[in-house]
Amino acid sequence: MTQTPKPATSAYTLRAVSDTWFKQSTAQSSTLPDDQKLFIKSGFSVPLSSFQPVANDHVKVALGLDKQGNQLQLRGRNTWYVYYPSIQILRNGQAVPINSLPATHSRPSLLLPLPFLPLLPRQLHHQDMP
Image (cartoon, rainbow, N blue to C red; front, side):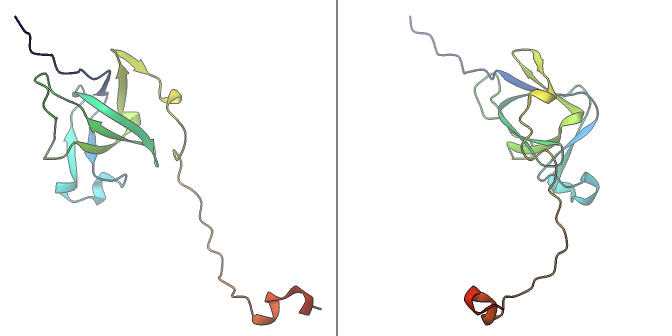
């Protein structure tokens, strides 16, 4: 008797620890149109296939598979951004500490308003400089 293989289960789960938003960008939810965000209640849980910390204290998440092995989607999308102080990432049921997530791009860079000063032809050749 052959058995149907069980779908792979995700080792990671996202759990909302407070009410939050799934969004299509890291922008403030109040600035996004309704079709670019989805309200998530505290306690909501969903398997993840992957996640990556990004700018502005957000995590980009790709939803995993349901128990039948079908790709999960919310509003027809399986990739969202979420503010990570509002969630927990669980691995095999254990919380992954936020400080263990890679810190790359966790803070926006500072851009200073500096004027553009084009080089004059004379400045291009250092031997011509006084």
